[in-house]
Each structure stands twice: as C-alpha cells, then as structure tokens.
Length: 360
Image (cartoon, rainbow, N blue to C red; front, top):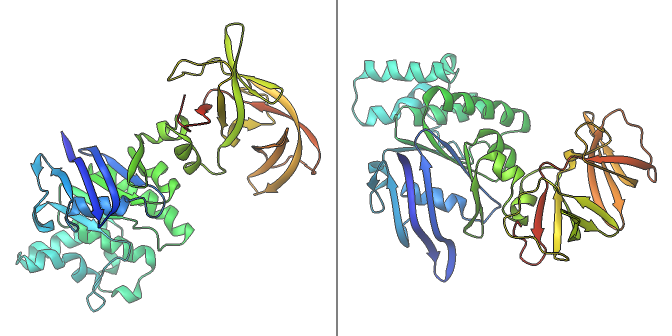
C-alpha cells in the first residue's frame, strides 16, 4: 500500500507555475527525499501534502484517503521544520508533550510517553532545560521528539538539518537513519543537499522547475541519471561530460572524443545508437584513477590543476581542450604539466544526446 500519493498535482501562483502535473507514489515505511535546487518546488510539494497550501488542481491521498481539502490536523501527519519551532519559555519535556497536553491526555500518560521519546532520541537528561540552553543538534532532536509524540502515518521533514554545522549534520543524518529503521515509519524529507538525499533515502524524487527529472533509488539516480541535469546535480566533484560522437568499430560501440575512441561494450542504450550522433560522455571522477584495478581503458594526459584534500588528490587533466577530472591517491606526487597514465572504469558511464541532454 502507498502511504502517500499525489495525482496530477498542480500549483500556481498567478501565472507562475510552481508544480506541473506531479504524479508520485510513496511507499509505506519508505524514506522519500524530495531533492532539488532552490525554487524547484520541493518545499511547496511538501506543504501541499501537509495541507499548509491549497492545491490548484489534482489530489493528495494519505493512507488511501483523499485529503486534498482536509485540514492539516485531519491528515494524520507530523511535521518537523527547519526553524525547530520550539516554545522558548517551555522546558524540553513541556515542548515534547505539548500536543498531548492540549488534547487533554492524562498527565501520567504524557510523562511516560515524553520519557520514552526522549530516551529514544538520547535527550532524556535534558527534559528540564529550556531551548536556549541546548545546542542546535539538541534542539532539532526536541523538534523531532514532538513529532514522534503524535505517532502519525507520515512524518514530513522540511530541511531539518540546514541550520546545523557540518559535523552536526553528519551526526544527525545517522540518527535519522537509525530512527527510520527503528520506527519503520514513512518519512517524506525535503533537502537541497545531495549527500543527505543519497545517504538517507530509499527513494529520491529529483525536481527542477516544478517537474520531476528522475524518480529512483540513490543507486539509480547516481549511476543511471536520466538526463544531464540529474547527472550534474548529484555527485561531488561533478561528473565529467566530454563532447564527442557515437562511433561503431566492428560490432562494438564507443564514443569518439577528438581522436580518442572510448569503448562502451557493456552500456545499455535506451534508444538505438546511430553513428556520428553528437553526444556527451559522462564518467564520474572516481572512475578515472591511476590504479589499473578494474580498468577497461587507459590513456595518458597532462595535469592542468590539482588539489590535495588529505584523503585523496583531485586532479584535472587536459583532454584535447576538454577538462577531465579524476580522483587519485593522496600520496601521489604531482606537478602541473606532468603526464600521467589514467585508467577508466567504464561500468557506470552515461551517454547523453548533446541536443536534448537526455540519456541514450
């Protein structure tokens, strides 16, 4: 059963189209991430599911029930905001238990449930503190705890880690992953951060200009991008996109980049390949290395720039006027202008039509 469905969903403000004919199915128990750049419509989509915005046309279905016109309180959801939205004059325990209190639940029942949720989030020792006495990560745990108190069908998270520093974001990602596993809950999560999406999601919906560009698992999004936008948005350093032509030698297809023919024997074309078609050949920097292990193709190119990160060296090479980025061993000694033999792993390459930028 699908926990949440949106059917032919549209949202406009005046003549501006924010979401255009969206159809999505989000599985019960899944962790669906709405990913995309600022202004792509991901937060608007979440707010439509929550009932915080009116739908222009289309349907929102939660737990098999059409809730398109229902108030947020009648949708059996809980939402965690970027800004935490905690009451500053209340203690942690009072913030977490506030929903049950206004619903006039017995005090002993509230106290028991608050303690259970706080212990689950490892903030049981903070129940008597106020939000001002907490770190950013602790405040976010309190906001999540308040949502957990409701035990809803669906949890909605709107960029909950945006205000945290890099270290805390990493810690909270892991906590959210554990929480999802322990609760077996349905989560819909909005972020512009590709690392959050890749590490947390069971399904990613990548949006741009109000239109889903690709819906799939993190593996599919990363290794089989549907178009150039998806390929470039996910992955750091960004994917290499080399201009070339499809060219067949004997029974084998390859991409001709200037005078270098790169074979793509195992590539699964989505359309019939045609000789001399202009294409963009996509290969991730981690699949271009100095190691011959898992190598399918080798070439020697001059170094044009490099940066050492400690765990690896990121280098850029001049491939007949086009830049080719590679991830190299951290201990490799490099100088600009050095010629280096590179090895390509061609298992997860992508080929796009140069005109449409769609996957071939």
